[in-house]
Every structure is written in C-alpha cells, then in structure tokens.
Length: 165
Image (cartoon, rainbow, N blue to C red):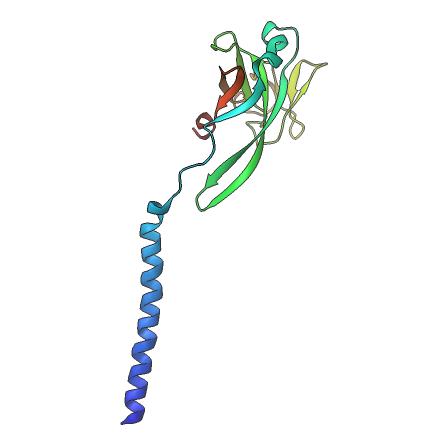
C-alpha cells in the first residue's frame, strides 16, 4: 500500500510540475505585450546644426555623409545600430535638404560618394546612383531611400519613424 501511494503522489507531482511550466510559458506569451516598454529615445535623429549644411543647400558642395546611432527593437531583442546617410539638396523639401540612405537597394551593401564621378557607387555589384539617389547603372532595382529632413531649433533632424515605415 505504501508503494502504490508513493508512486501515485510522485506521478501527480510530476504531472503538476509539467502542467505548471507549460501554463507559465503560455501565460507569459499571452501577457508579454502588456509589459512592453515605451521607447526612451527621441523620435528624431539629430544630424547636427543646420548652419553646417548651408554650402550644401546652396549647391556649392557635394553630398555630406552623416552617421547616426539609434535603438532598434526587433521582436524580443533591442540593439544599438549605426546608420549612414548622405545629406543632399532637395528643392521640394521645406528644409531644402533630404537624407539618402547609404544602403544599396540591391543587396544591402554600403554605398559611398565618389566626387570625381559625381555618383554614389556600390562596391559589391557595380551599382551606380546619381547625386539624387536615382539608379544610373548596375543591378539595383530602385533608387536609394530618400527621407525628408526638418530644421528644429537650429538643428537638422530626421524623423526616425520614417525609417521603420
């Protein structure tokens, strides 16, 4: 009698332990979104003082590269990434400037401005983009991503929400 009772209690205890671990995981999955934290960072990425880009706005200099750091949330992971942009003149924008992503639209390689050729060049597969980001040659399927810039408090800024769209 003692052996059967001990076995039954051990079996019930094991079943309860297994059921509670599965129920705990399911509960964490269901309630996880309620615990999500709001982003701590500003919604705008700062490119520096707007006065530093006056020569570019006037058309007397070529595109200027700016590197910004931002926080990216991807599912369960949060990480800091650096992104490269080229600030170019844009007569249609209120600020007179726009930012081009310096990531090739073909396979995601980094492009660089070549002053001699007056073009953005991709070293991976020979993609060539014009000063406005339009495709001139090579395999890229579409132009470089163009994002509007705003001037706020004398600072040139990019709306980070436009990057995630």
